[in-house]
Length: 309
Ligand code: ING
Image (cartoon, rainbow, N blue to C red):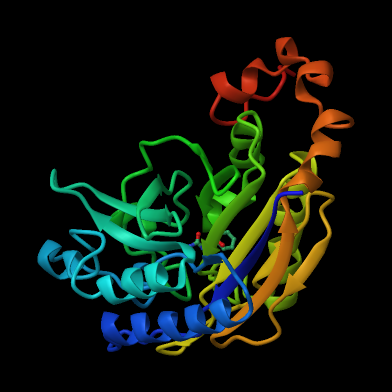
């Protein structure tokens, strides 16, 4: 058995005026709760240090850059790394990364239990748009503020298993899980900031969006026989609602832990990485069952090409 007690540290709303230091204090409180419940790994949301700023249209790059971290850990996040090291708890969380070369990414990291960063991921599937969209009830400008990730979907051997990360919209794309599945991933950690309503389809409310949220993470887990830990930043940020629904899914696709609120809330589950083995050796033994000679278009074609009339 390769058991580890995993915490999903859902964060409630972070207002535009809130400081990073305040967000980190809340993260540390959740980390302390996780330690008290025996967690050795805690997963936090996407962009967990600030409000979801891609909802705001900005033109001035200096203003945009105020939402990004130039170093990790930096002065605001060092207290989090120090407490994680003190507790001997590995952490994964998302933030906006500004590289020394001036590139902007929606990034997530994973540390070991000594607070050393052992893996980094940069969000590949960027939803939304790059210019102000008058048709939307609210903006979703990730294509304006971030570059697509340039690190692929890496899987890292750590804590006795194989761990991978993705971020928010990535969870809706089966390719995300399969590329990690083809590396033997046993736990996918992801954070998300998902509006409770569809800015382009007002009729699509929280219930349907929560259905999709669970559907994609349960499918990804089952079809690749891996654990999935999905953690929300939820609540109402400056009037804009985002849903919660943080959850832990086992390799059979079953939800084994789920948040009940849209506030700071810790969910915890003891995950046995060996539970991935049966699926990987039977129904999803990729080497025995996949027929890649028929899959070419998945990697060679971006959009739809319909058959001729
Ligand atoms: N947020 C949303 C997400 O993928 C979205 C954007 C919502 C896209 C609903 C499509 C449908 O959960 C982020 N940050 O990607």
